[in-house]
Image (cartoon, rainbow, N blue to C red; front, side, top):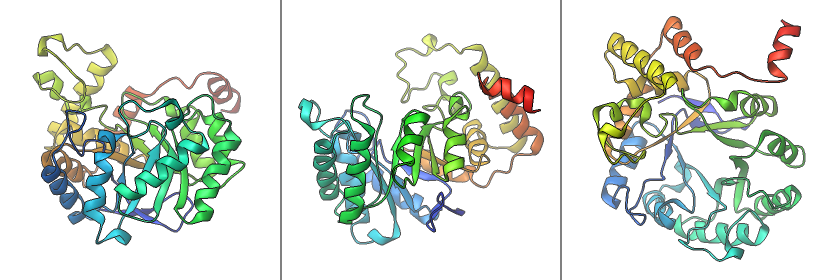
Length: 319
C-alpha cells in the first residue's frame, strides 16, 4: 500500500483508511471480535496504518476492539475518532451534541476504550445545528493544548461552516461522503479542503456496497433489502453499474474494486469499511488497479453532478 502526506502535515498515511464502524455486534449487525481482529491484521499486513472510528459505532464496542488491537503497538497507527452522537443507546440530552460538555465526556470515554492517552485526529461527527462555532473551536483547541488530541477535523459539516472554523483554528482533516453515486461534495467541500490544505477522508466509497453489484444478485448488506425482488436501480445508478461491470471484465477484477480504484485516483483518502476478511482483502487489491485514462473518464463523466450556481456561471465566463 502506498503512503501519502496527510493534508499539509508531515504525517504519512496509507492511501486506504480502514473504517471500523462494523467492529462489534452491540447493534445486532457487525463483525465479532475475532473477525474484526483478522480484518485489522490483514489491513496492517498490507501496510495500512490509519483507522477511522467513532464513539457511536456499535455503542462504543468498535473503539474497544480497536483499542485492544493497537494496545501494544499504539505508535504505529493513526487513529481518527469522532464524537457527537454518544456511545449510549439513549443518551441524556446533555450527553450528545457538539458542545464542550459533550466533547469532554466523549474524549475521556474514547481514550479509555482505545487504551491510549491521545487521539491522532479528533472531530465532531456532524454539525448539530445549534452549538456555536466558536464553542467548537475553543473546545478542540483545549484538547490539543492538553495533549489529548494531536490534530482536529470536521465530519459532515457544510462548507461555509467548515471554512469559518478553519479561519479561527488550525484544522487538519475533513470527512465527506463520496463515491460514483454521491459527488455533491465536488461543489464546495472538496475544493474548500484543497484550498485550505485539509486531509480529505472520503467515506462510503462503495455506496454501502451498492457499487459492488451485489444487490443485483439478491445479496444483502448495509442497504437493508427484505427481498431481492424489491431492489430497483435508478437510471443513473444502472448506467454507472453497467459501466463498472464492463470495465471490471476488461481488467479481470470485481466491479467494486473498479469503483474504489476510481476514488483512489482522485488523490484523497477513501475510508473502506469491512465486516468480513473478504471485504478488506478485496479493497486492498483495488489499490493495485490502474484505470486507463479512457476508463477513468468514462466513469467520471457518467457520475458528474451539476455544480450549480455560481459555479456553472463562472465556468462559462471564465472559460
